[in-house]
Length: 158
Image 1: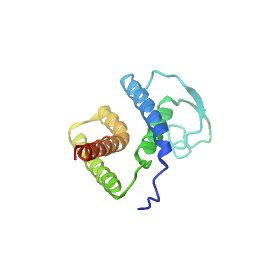
Image 2: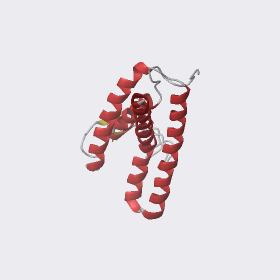
Image 3: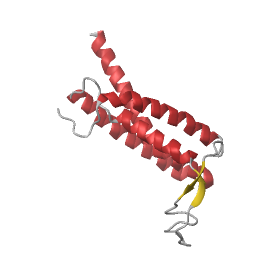
């Protein structure tokens, strides 16, 4: 079966490296209220307090700590490389596991989000939303690799 949208399997190690680095630094930033690393740079805000699409539109550069943006990008790119790189022996069965894992991860992610909408409020809810951006990839990676491991164990036992 030809997988048109999957990346070459050589990107998976780079993805693991980026994903784990992003996860470690992301948890570290989350624990320290996003204020630990000080990477202040001039940025052009499109939306924000002084952005082009704000209530006070202006075309001015502002200063922002971009540590959380960098960690988010590294985590997303790493997660996509891990999730959507082919395995060395990609076949229809692995494609089926991949599809089922993605559907399962989406259900679990939105189930948790619904519970958070019902039971979490104020700024804690904002933190849940930030974490929720990455959990679909995380749940998919965990389930997909667990199912691959489980299927390989069954094959080895036969």
